[in-house]
Length: 161
Length: 303
Image 1 (cartoon, rainbow over the protein chains, first blue to last red):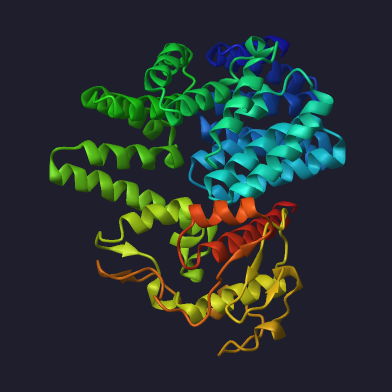
Image 2 (cartoon, one colour):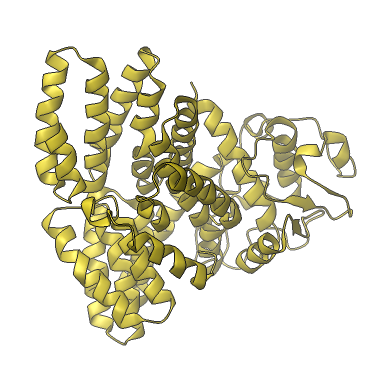
């Protein structure tokens, strides 16, 4: 799975996807629910980058419900972190904002900083696109505060939003 | 987005200085897109094209379709400014193909709108325009349920699009039940039933001179309004509501509503930004409405 994550991070999502699916099958066979949900969310992220939004949403939904069944707030937040972009692209800003808000909220409850930064950044950009610029800036600054506090050298993603 | 290019430049620069930026280029792609957009906004058109040309081959090679159309947009705009009309059109066509293949409707409609402006054939231009218009309509109705009758106004960006194209026929904006009467009921509902607002960015200054954050408004505060103020969820208020078409000269809103927001107050920045950005009668009010809707949807998602 680490290989899949690395492939996805360095642009090679086409290589990442089969690797992640293979890892997912192994986690499923091993009945390792925490790792399976992590894998599903990561695979969904790769699909988002590739523009395979249907697959991304399907995988995200599966991960979310598995996490929900085990009260895994961290995993729920992770499953929603990037898929909000899929909803946005599909022309569903309502679902996109709902998903981003929920990812941030669950991330705050679980202490999952990445979701607060990434989903928070996406949410801020969405508000900006919809014309609520001041609200978007407030949200971006909130996410940036988390990023600068916990990921001081990796705030670049947020700056882009 | 706010037009503060200095702040944007500083932010992009800080992002570019992230020492681990190259370790995860996929998740940093939005920074590159922002850099191209910033260059375009600053009038550095060649630089905007150069940034896009640097990344587009990599995006194509690795099939990163989520970012490709967005990277084409600043490039095509820069090409247009530089008079490279055919090149701009080719950029937009490739972006359109990718956005269509991925179902990226939010990305597709501005591309179609830009293509329609470049299309020499009036019929083809009109068709492209209509496609863009239909997508916009389908997006805005997700922000405000159809019964609101306010799809065009729920977000200013899309509203601007509607207003620019209001001369086009068959524009569905729900004018038939979206007048001041309907708006008041909607806002009254939002105030009384759904006061969620994540950033409480502004309070509304009503035509009667009162100035209260809407969270503090009660139904009785609106008693001067000439209608029933009982909280009514919109789906109950207009059970049979349907969209209606308006003719080419109609305006989406009554020109002289019986009440209206006349200002927004939280900070000079917000006031200036909103008024510069939303120069419509009801824009400020509907940003509030939209945000309140967001809160409601958030609650739904918790289940």
